[in-house]
Image (cartoon, rainbow, N blue to C red):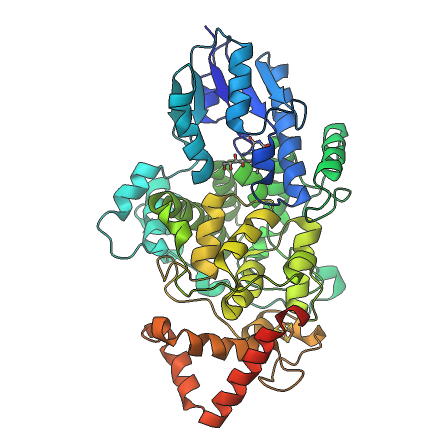
Amino acid sequence: MPRLIVVLGDQLSPALASLQQLLPDDIIMLAEVGQEASYVKHHKHKIILLFSAMRHFAATLQQQGYQVCYIKYGDIAEIISMTDAVQHVLAQHPAVTTVIITECGEYRLQQEILSWQQLLTVPVTILGDDRFICDLARFARWAKGKKQLRMEYFYRDMRRYTGLLMQGDKPEGGKWNYDSDNRKAWPDWPEQQQPDAPLSFAPDAITAEVAELVQQQFAANMGRSDNFSYAVTGKEARAAFLHFVKQQLPQFGDYQDAMRLEQPFLQHSICSAYLNCGLLDVRWMCNKVQQAYQQGLVPLNAAEGFIRQLIGWREYVRGLYWLKMPAYKQNNFLHAERALPGYYWHGNTSMRCMQQAIKSTIDHAYSHHIQRLMITGNFALLAGLSVDEMTDWYLAVYADAYEWVELPNTLGMALFADGGMLASKPYAASGAYINRMSNYCKHCSYNVKNITGQDACPFNALYWDFLQRNQQQLSANPRLALAYANWHKRSDEDKAYILAKAAQTLDTLEQL
Ligand code: DLZ
Ligand code: SF4
């Protein structure tokens, strides 16, 4: 008796729980559906990546002899949602006895899947997603009774649990966390010392067909469909990651937070999009990084910094998302409601840092974590941009974005809209931080040293205005004590000038 195994676009792993149980009679369904492709205005590269990777994944299963039911975008007009797709396949295969699916990454769709229990004529089994190291029950146990859910302590638990970079019960090198060794600015290297580009992949026939479809159907979405170069199979993604381990990882630790005008990727792996749709496996990646460290090929601050992002931060935000949803999405601690200026979509602004971060987002459906946190996120925080619009923006424009990872990172970490559940202070910074960590300001028509005046860097007055306007919510935060002390030291006249400049900046946000 066949069973129907439903595989979602971000579940493209041969080791997926539901595929582990495959029997020869089973039918596997993958579907390109309008609802998933348009719940936000996804970047073209994100859609091309998923549709192409889904088609490749399905082809491999077929080659292995399995029966795959693949629904291409637009082929059956009545199929709009995953529910429609499942009902369609069930109608075609009345012998199916049960539907099996691995738990999904987003609350929105998980609710829809839960409704299948009532809706469908056959029972539905939802399996846990063991591609994550920490299952949701384990995270809930860890979180229970804790006043603060600090990533650092979760991370230490995960190090002990996985044994990664451990010497018995002690952390390798004696310290758990080498974050303070991850903050160098990128020097003015000579040409020959510039980093290798990440591996890129020429589109094959499947990707070319999908790119054409996306150009036709999603023409207004961000990005171009003729410069797509992501990996679309597990094999390619593993090659891209091994290239990173060899070429970039040795310096990844030092320059994790650096930004550079002419270098959109620096030493970052660009593999999050592969990991989050299932083409890469987190344990495999961590083992490769640990091996490189053990072979003396990469320093400890690089290996630890990378493994921390994966088994610490990534697993932590996923646990937190599922623990706190759906209420988490409603948070807007600082009442941020201002409409997003148009340059978030086209990048045409004189602020060089914003222009650079947004243009690289448009070109690659990618920008690295400090560009997301300290440029586009910081600007939104300072200007009080709408939390709803910002979180939709991040979910749409990055190839690696699914709500479980995107929402805590943006609503919580970047916008402080959860009031400090995730971050112990808002990541608000003036132009001085951006100047220290990048060469953007040297190439900007604004002057990073000025707070007021025609050419003053907009981040500066906005930074003080942010503190002043959110005084009630933030001034008791000990990690902001110094910032508030510096603000209060200023004369009333000085403060009035700065606040007037900020008000004018906010009034002309669109023209910056
Ligand atoms: C993001 C996305 C897109 C653009 N399209 C599809 C699709 O057509 N079919 C599909 O199964 N999944 C797609 N996805 C990924 C889903 O949105 C994702 O699986 C859920 O949101 C859970 O994380
Ligand atoms: Fe950005 Fe200000 Fe520096 Fe210009 S001067 S790049 S706006 S931080």
